[in-house]
Image 1: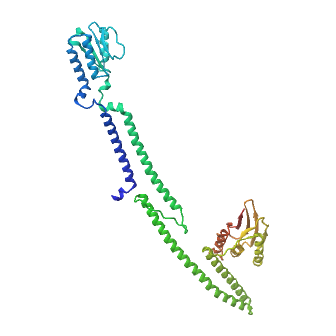
Image 2: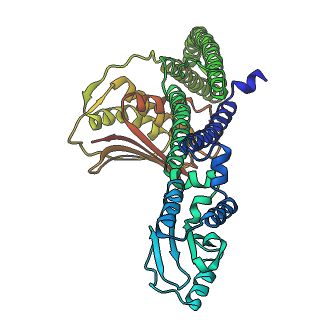
Image 3: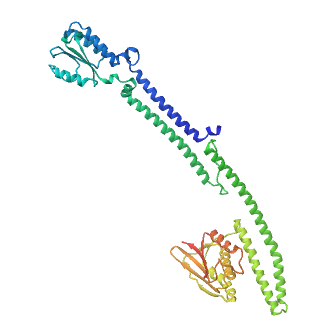
Length: 453
């Protein structure tokens, strides 16, 4: 239950309940204040004076008490009623139909009342507005009759009268309550939005290990629980990152130790192979020694790639960028590889044109890139027996293009390895702020090393 009262749902329900309470309280308060201004609402006398039946009885009684049907007595009667009912109008018609006395009559009265007009007047006034009472003076029709007219709105219930008179105040009070509810709701949801944006910003921030940064938990509601869960996730990520770094460090040390340990026996094997090659061997023995030398070279290159890959993953591979004539550098590299491809009966096509701009590269890294690409062709594209190295220049980039007619990278070969060579190419190209593109299919592979302008 305590958790529910701390939730955002409970807080918003409280806002709605308070708004409803204030709505009713404001309505009643304004009505009571307005009703308090009406002096004629309280007391039994006021209630009687607002009762049409009481007024009618009293008018008949006062009319019957008039003994002398004179202008003075009628005027006195009218003045008395005018004090009690300021909005009333009264007039006197004698037995001949002449209007002798009138007070605050609305509209024009005929100077002489005929029986037909009198009947029409009574018919129109019966049950209509204004409330009309007709009485004979002294109870004798020979003295004529007096008429009392009072607007019907004076007989309305107090709450209706108050509403009509003070409806503006009631409306203003309701508008105020609604406005307060909207403002409080806006502030409530703005606070939620602000906290969510802070959480989003915390998710986007990163520390030195490229992990999100924790956020301060201020409330124990749903967003606070989300913030706490987010902080727990960050802690788990940091622990996982630390374990990963420790495992990566162990792996690097293992690879470095293995590479060092493998080079020592490999050097001895190479020396013994050289000694055996000097002996008088049969053609089969010479072929075996040749195959052994090739394997030693491949193993040595694999160890070198493994070491380079480990250093690159750890960002510890030495790099020295200089401005370099890339085309000339590639041409010199191809000169050392040309006899190898010629020995394997490759058709080699070189189409290198100078670039206008030198490349900012590391010669050791660029040499390793092309050595790995050419070694990859030599091992996996022997079936095509074709190599082409060319340049390509556009308005957007300069590129060195290497093409072979092998079966493509997706097809297996007898020399297929773990792909470390191309992984090293990828990391070295990106490390020198260059780009590369590879397109491989059944008819061959095209690799481009690009420098954008």
